[in-house]
Length: 228
Ligand SMILES: *Cc1c(COP(=O)(O)O)cnc(C)c1O
Image (tube, rainbow, N blue to C red; front, top):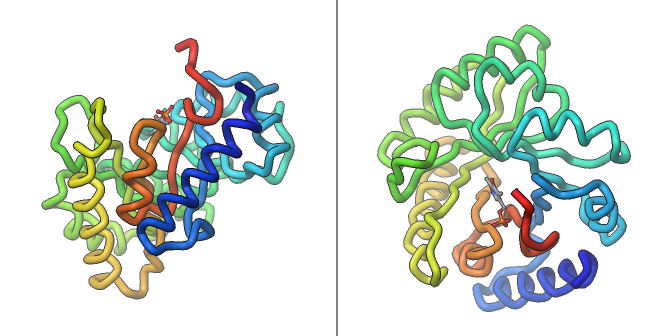
């Protein structure tokens, strides 16, 4: 199965899931997750109309970027260590994974110095998994309030990685909870421009779209199984 055929099927399924929820598929942006994926496969995805790429490791992203055309929208989707912030700030257009006050301060210090505003999503650990990064749902509003006072960051929304389950229906409540937090954040911070709800991966993206995701992050569904 090739990348273009995978993308065709994924887009058709997204359109169906959006339709089931009374939404337009145009509301749903696709982030192609390229960790562990060869440049050839990435180029096939670009040729098939993908323009947003997501990476979760700084080194891998830095190695890949010079090999690919300009004009790609790069998103950073993994845990970001504060000492790596300096490498990503001017190379990504969205960080999905703001997961601590320390990281917010580090981004603010550097971006503020350069007079920039870095778009970020706050990562929420909805299910409270010990192995995952992200804020507990109960701390999100206070965190958003605190971050909105920092120069150099622009909060664009919320992101979560749902627990790995066999039946994606099991994580519907996780997506529903993030959607509610998102709506509350939009109501509490109307001037912030919060408009991204990043949720859904290969195993669960159709449920995520049904629950309101407008940014979905797909690796395996597009590129096939990773070697690592
Ligand atoms: C790897 C990764 C994805 C994509 O995972 P697939 O199951 O291959 O679609 C999405 N989001 C994050 C944060 C990831 O690390």
